[in-house]
Length: 120
Image (cartoon, rainbow, N blue to C red):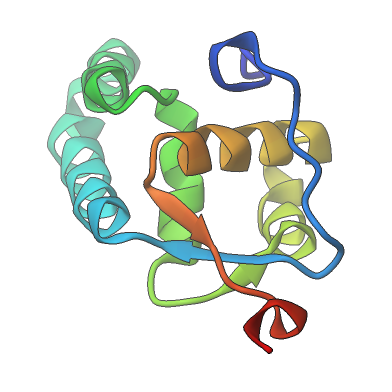
C-alpha cells in the first residue's frame, strides 16, 4: 500500500469523467529508467529491488510503485478506470491509482490528454 495518497499531502485533484492520460517527454525517460532499475535489481532480491525503486523515485518526487503506471501508459492514452482495471489483480485500490496519477501529473511525468470539449 502506498503511504502518501497525494503529492506533498495536497488535496486530491478531481479529474473530469473520461479524462485520459499520457506520458510526457520526461515520463518517457522515467519509464525507461524504471524498467532498467527493475531489470538490474530483480535478480538481487527484494531489498535491492526496493532500494532501486526508491533511488528511481526520489529525484522524480514520486513513489517507487508509481512506475507501474508509467509502464501502463507507455505508448497509450488511458483513463483512471483503464488503469484501475490493469492493476486490480495486484490488489491496488482505485484510490491508490488516483493518488499515483496525481503524483505523476504533479511531477510532470504524465499529462492529461485534452478533452474534446476543451479543443473547440
